[in-house]
Amino acid sequence: MSSKRLARTSLLIALASLVALACASAEQRVRVRDAGGELRDPFAAAEGRRALVLVFVDPDCPISNAYAPEVKRLAAEYGPRGVAFELVYSMPATDAQDVRRHVADFAYELPALLDPEQRLALRAGVVAVPEAAVFLPDGELAYRGRIDDRYVDLGRRRAQPTRRDLCDALDAILQGRSPEVERTEAVGCPLPGPHGT
Image (cartoon, rainbow, N blue to C red; front, top):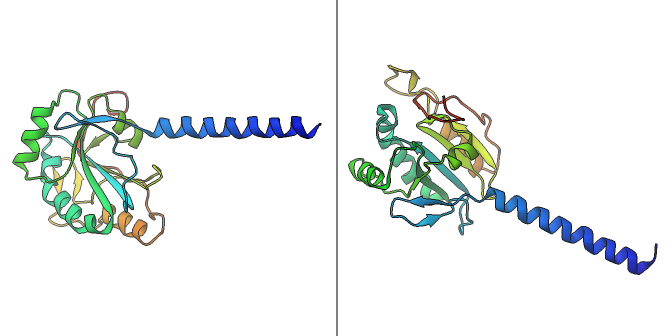
């Protein structure tokens, strides 16, 4: 093979690789509206961010609402360490007004995203609320599941959790390790649709 032909073949392979990389990167993008109506991509790179935690919640789920103080505590504890927390509302009937009311009622100071088509829920593999999904800066899902084991089952709650799964996952990530447990089952209200029950 001539050197010209070899150079052209190498260039075509390099271009094909770039196109494949761009397509894969575009597939990772999910743009949804926030409670103010702005289109946002929660996976867009943010300076200094070490992890993104999407917390899937619902105004009508009592278990989800019971976790509001813990979600706020975790955001306050891990936020200064480079962990971004965002609320995600994936119930199809929940609108922006419902979300704004819920955020105000529970004094959340976190970004709130509307996911009526459940694209974020599908990307994370979430099937119930409340459920947390932790993503690394490159978009890789590092942990998905319960916040802690306070709820043993529907209607059965411990006074205090014995495992703090989300904290354990975040601590591992901040120490440069993969979480020991990457998936747990969340107890809560099921998401309707193809990936909920």
